[in-house]
Length: 446
Image (cartoon, rainbow, N blue to C red; front, side, top):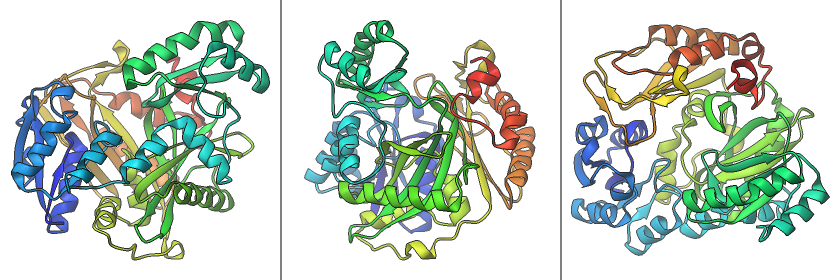
């Protein structure tokens, strides 16, 4: 690969550009009119405007992005996460345009993008799945029949869902009838696809995911687990590795299941297999994300493997240079997502100009961000502006580092959730590692 266009913005665009620089690969940043002064446009070798501020006219505009690749002579496109990163049509057009899409093949994205079809495939591969409908449900009557078979509580979910959208928990037949059409409408609006499926609701589970790398020569490894249970309204807030409930035996079982999932799908690139783990340490397949994850840095900190560089090497046709037995897991890593939002005002987004900035540093601390002093955060996009990642020899050391990092962090001019995160990590249950996906709602009444 000679030149990679990064079809994204913010901290992930900066992250990919840095990896490319270290690999001596030229980079092209794309930007909307709202992002003309963004950090990623300054760090890349070239930058090109792809449209006005709204995402559908810029970062989601496939035609403009492909044209930008042609104009700049880019031979590859890295989609980052969000936007077009899991868009089958985008990956297919890249393939047809002789531009390397740095990710899995379009047919694999399509296969895994439909959650109900993915679930059927995982059952075939012997990967544990949550009891529920076999594929999509077509009618309310069919939903009621399945609900009677698996019992309440259950979840109605959009087949093409993601990001916590298109999900409702229902506890009885009346709630099922009330929410069925609501989820169908939300799925149509959010994903232009109103297919739904039903699965048993696993009460108070842990959300644990396995990072995999799969090359185009049949080699697949897993890089251990990440615990993403600290969530607000299905949106991850804090992630860590290792999980406090995963021992070596469970890690091996989950890792082997993730590898089976990748094999049956014909998967290549980096990917993440997400599981729910119940209180008895039974784990169930939830979905597979066909892109780099927001929380990938904690895995990098613990394994020493640069996942973005491996993603690029795989796309270039290279074989993985390590086997499963070569991967070493060292210490403990935690990531906190810093959002420009006001927790006291129902987490209302807070765009605006950053008038003062101090980012923490020191041994074992990494900051992934696209902000700088004087930068104006646009109101148009997601509110995440930075990630603080720490690594310590033990979990207690990692928590102590994160506390210190949050105390050093200064972002003036906009509200952030940093104080809210500080409160989470000093909560006794968090310090003990005793939590599940209901942690924030239980401890903060949110």
